[in-house]
Image (tube, rainbow, N blue to C red):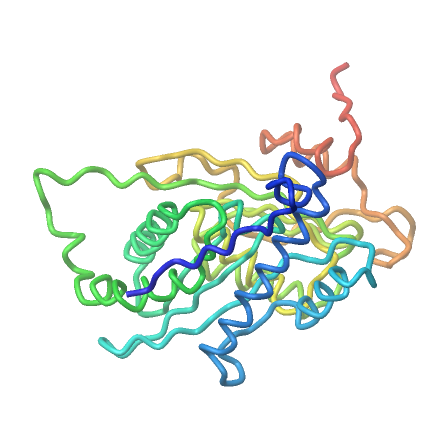
Length: 316
């Protein structure tokens, strides 16, 4: 049985945490980053083989250490990684995707487990169970190792009893899902292999939306939360740095979410560029055309969020 590790912040002579979350935020942040490095050391000792712990940014731990030593002023990126777990019975693998917010362990950890051996419904139930378990931890408790132990102890039933969820039951309650729409901004999207990857991932997962290529590059993806998060992780991994999720919209639903979709498929959106040379790094896409596209799909409000420019209606 795994015992949660709680590493309290050190106290100064007055009995107060240095900086505390009510005081100097930078000091608090550094304490949190120190705890995160300690937990990463534990994970690397638990999974010593190369490739078992895959960091999204291979330099992130070095950058955090430099920040803590005062050799780097800018706040380092968040620690994001994937651990591949081997479940003994049945013989299956689970990829646990982990994101540590800068203030973890004093804010919630972001976790998502997936396996090709699980259908979508069981993967949803697995992650709900994992999230519920992690929610029992108190602020300040390191819980990645506990999440791993929970998956090793509890995931087998999700693989062995997949068919049970589909058996009718008079007492069964509808499963509530989160329908998510993410608006993603990139400085540009030009490369053919990247464009192909985005389209392939969008069509493989049960998501709809679009990818506007050129400069800037805009992606909208909508569907159930776990599918959108998998899309977001897959297109970024391993080295797409200049990309961010500018806005997300979510709603709880008991249905299949089809009535919530603004788009019918996942497609590439090609618009005119300013200038006569088409897609080139020094030519911006026609944002006026993009605004009209958003209006047709009831998303005009996102224009200001993406670009910081208020849209002007053509009717005014």
